[in-house]
Length: 159
Image 1 (cartoon, helix red, strand yellow):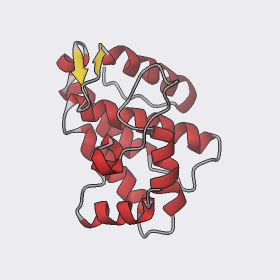
Image 2 (cartoon, rainbow, N blue to C red; image 1 turned 180 degrees about the vertical axis):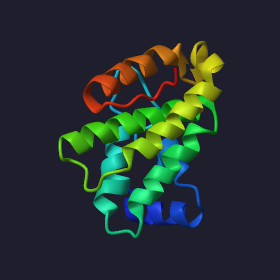
Image 3 (spheres, rainbow, N blue to C red; image 1 turned 60 degrees about the vertical axis):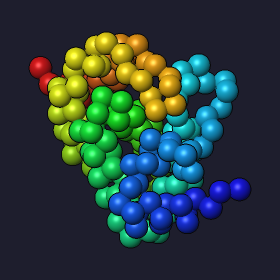
């Protein structure tokens, strides 16, 4: 069994928490096979095991926010990963599952900037490091945005 706390502390020390979100090698949590849209890691388990159960770590909220913002401006693939985590975080906060909350507007602004920067790739396709290809991820981002505009009163897509 993985020692998530040890792995998180190592990633923090190496300034590479984004690797956890990306599901890189030793940080990866195998997603359930029942999930139709296969993804490099199990988002909810990553949030629970790496972050919410480690909420005593100093500035854990800032670390998560910073990693999401970093991914949002790195590449189209990383931006998409950031949005999937962001959406799961909002859901967990809404359901009171999250042990801490993030500054939604700050992360949403970084995501909006990333979407604008990577618009071309997002309207075509992206390929995850594990080889999975997501066709037209912008369509999913638009669905998320509609939900955010309706329920949260903010937008991740700049007009």
